[in-house]
Length: 152
Image 1: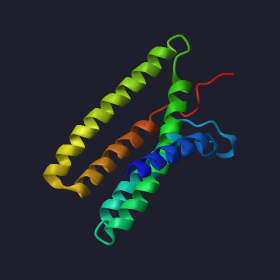
Image 2 (image 1 turned 90 degrees about the vertical axis):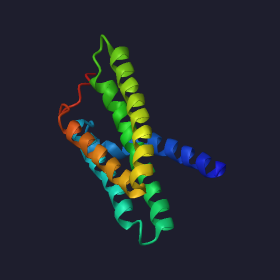
Image 3 (image 1 turned 135 degrees about the horizontal axis):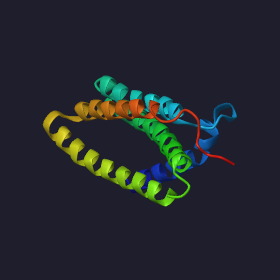
């Protein structure tokens, strides 16, 4: 298990490293619509895992988690870029700090909620709730400015 987690963390870092090349499609600077498209791709994975879990649980779970990890790393890298590009030059550290504080709070709430949902309703319910929250992120991402705020 330790080796699996170590490999997972290394692969996640590699994907985050190459993510700018993946998200910078046709040399366009990513914006809120880019984030929405990548989040939409991400939300398909937990829904598919939940729907296919009864067919071949081991393979569905492993392949699904690998795909989710790849898309999550791309989304994470894109969000890191966007928070820096949308940050106000005068208060960039405050904007970025607020983003990471909100991110940590979201992870805490997600951890507590998923634990409760898992105990009360099972694993598939956790995956559908995850899909719902990612869909909320899609809607919010569409509301972000269309063009990057970075000026050279």
